[in-house]
Image 1 (spheres, one colour):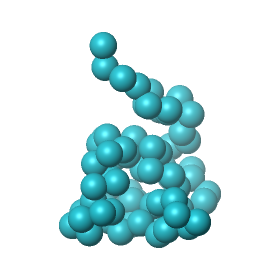
Image 2 (cartoon, one colour):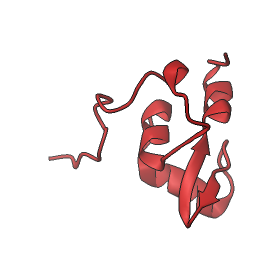
Image 3 (cartoon, helix red, strand yellow):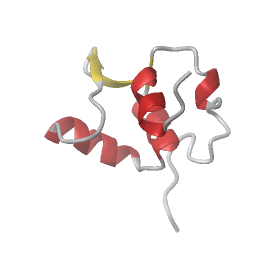
Image 4 (cartoon, one colour):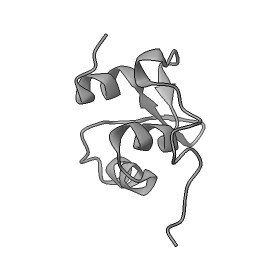
Length: 75
């Protein structure tokens, strides 16, 4: 059985165009990018992914504007 992470079904997350925060947590960013959260964490550690997160109190925060740009959903 595949392990599910919080929000994996998307029920907890608003559509990206309705997101009002400037940065979102790793699990939510992974959902929008259709990647596993661990992939985004690896991008952060290796600094080789298409996005660079901010670090706020030791936690990763992914910029919503960059997610929209990457997905071609710029407002």
